[in-house]
Amino acid sequence: MAGQDSTSVSPGEPGVTGDLFSPACPTRQLLDRIGDKWTSMLVKVLAEAHPGELGFAELRRRTPGVSHKMLSQTLQSLRHDGLVERRVDPVVPPRVYYSLTDLGLSLDAPLAVVRAWAEQHIRAIEEARRRPD
Image 1 (spheres, one colour):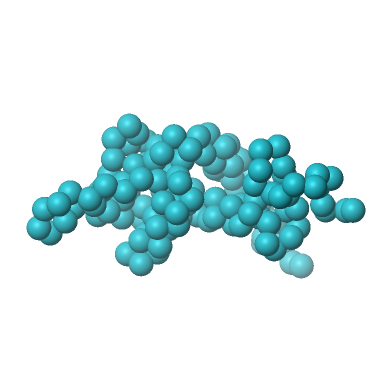
Image 2 (cartoon, helix red, strand yellow):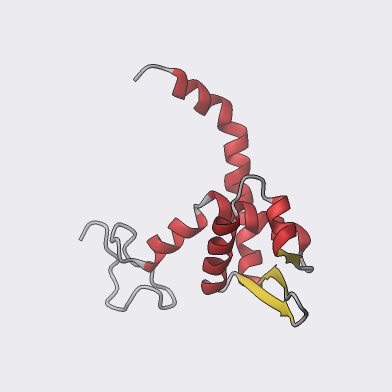
């Protein structure tokens, strides 16, 4: 079948690629997450701080344009996916710190390649956008 893997086991099991064209495919859902600009920026910022951690306010300062709500939602999603760890200092008010997990750190290199491609090709893309359709 076109667009389907040839295995009989479920996507997500070792060695199974799934069906990228299925909206329910976990791989597709993950690509949606890591293709997000805020995810790419946060992984880069946290990778630069590795093995250290950064507080919420510092992450917001280092990620220009991100709203409080979007930063919070993105960090929550990255935690849910096992890419980011959250540590809370039990002080008043509580201080919250974030760092990449080993899995999250492994995402930095592939995203760096995509960022480099975008920087290398942005002029050609901008020229194409200026052409009439």
